[in-house]
Image (cartoon, rainbow, N blue to C red):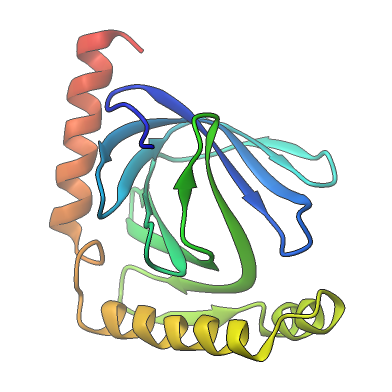
Length: 179
């Protein structure tokens, strides 16, 4: 099942133990096919597991994959595109929301190409607490290597042209449909 293009969807991230981690109140679907779902969030309510609520500050083009153990959020800011990549289970759409399981590790990529791997301590702690299997850890760590290779080689969506194209498409459809 795939979400319909040019509609809004919820996005939900869980933890390995099944508990809800974070929810985005709406994302505008630009692409939904067997390779990926591309969704734009803009001034969107985000609800954390602890009940905290906040609104996203800038538009973001988000990439969810049914066969990759990560998702990518490209945040469009005045001084360039910043990427926040979550190591997570492959994403699915179940008719209610785009869903995945967050596995703690994150990569933050800056406009100048510098990147940081974040939350390694949380990954280790949650791995013990939630009993991540050896096979699961191998997959996550292998996918981290794959993600870093994509970043280092500027493969889409880690290039400005891809993000600009999707954001222009979003603006065109939002204006046309008065969403």
